[in-house]
Image (cartoon, rainbow, N blue to C red):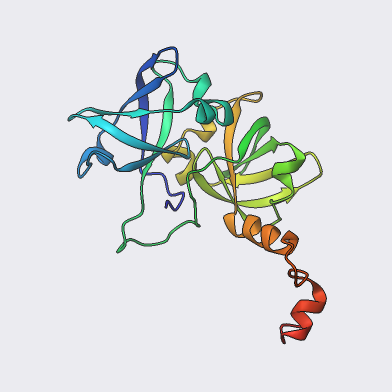
Length: 213
């Protein structure tokens, strides 16, 4: 599990692709300090498993499904990426619950400066937007952010200077693709509300009968 608080910006050193394989090698420094084989690292919000590392970089296998669902397939040698290690049990929960399992991608529509902040508007498909609510949380390329505005076609976040300096989001331009992970709680609530079993599943009547309404 991650929190969406980016620890450092790394760079893609190498992308090895085969007939059925893809291995990303990422240059980093801070996150390598206590790294182990098998550890989870969020790369642009995508949870990857470390298969090899040294003092300057780490490598991770990437499955085809991950390449299809995320913006990792558009990365090139030298591309900057957001990096976060999995949350330690004694760490502060500074962001929100981020699984590192990308729901899909969005496209940056605009970046507009407002005093010390920058508004970023992102378009997304209806199946993504249905989980996004005003003042709720969303992970954009692994960054935990608060949704400030939402419409039927897009949503907007406001980026403070610290977030702009510590992540790659403001390095991007209109038209670029970003990874999106919606609040996992919303997805569980939807699943439970739509679940059907012989007793009728969870409904307004069910909740009332059991004292929840």
